[in-house]
Length: 362
Image (cartoon, rainbow, N blue to C red; front, top):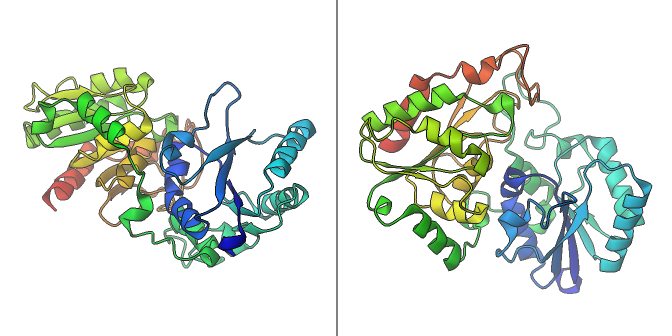
């Protein structure tokens, strides 16, 4: 089949983290169709020059171009524009990687791509088992059962293409370029690289995932006392620079080594190169967390319970996750007012420190 496939359209929506979770699937598609031109249909803000996925996939060779999809559009004109663009590309195969949004949505998507002239579709979740993160089942084994990682669900739905090798570092390889690695090295600085580095990201764009500025400041102060002379690498968006400075204000007075605030100074791929130099990453459920996991850096991750356990945890057995299961778990809320974020705010600094100690001792 691969010998006769010249053009592949991959459908995947989402943010930085959503793209990183799908890396093994992108590698699998590239192995299955090595000679094909592979384009990604993904969300692209109108004013943006490139989609969020490009910040991860550029320079990997996994994707060769992009098509814009306006998320949630009901505009007939926009859908006709997209259908015509797909027809002009003339894909032989569609590979469906977008998150499960219900059977009716999957059926509607499948019909749209057929009308757009795509003769073969792979991975469209047209069954309950394909939709749910239950390892192929249709109901959880118990009310407290953990869910299947999203990377695993995607790979399972693409099994006709082969084994995604989820446990292989090669399946998460970002193919970072020498220039990207050199930029990260310069940003960290020669002096800092003479010490062991701990990477931290205190930011999040979602209120319900935020552990709180004061918790971060106490954690980093106590961490500097417990592990003196370590370099602190702070990563995140430009908007998170001030919060990072606040959290790290007592790092050096408490015995820590140099502080390097990289917020807003590096691209996501350059940030991945910086994270690869760190012994440990500590942060929220976020894009930087998934970047750290993709380059093999162990994560200590602080999770709210807005999602059910394990679905969005960083992939791999070495990571240490702090997650408190509460009665309102799985709420999906981006802003939590009524319950006052009791899931994530019940996680104590002592608990996080204990996981850091265990990670650094292993």
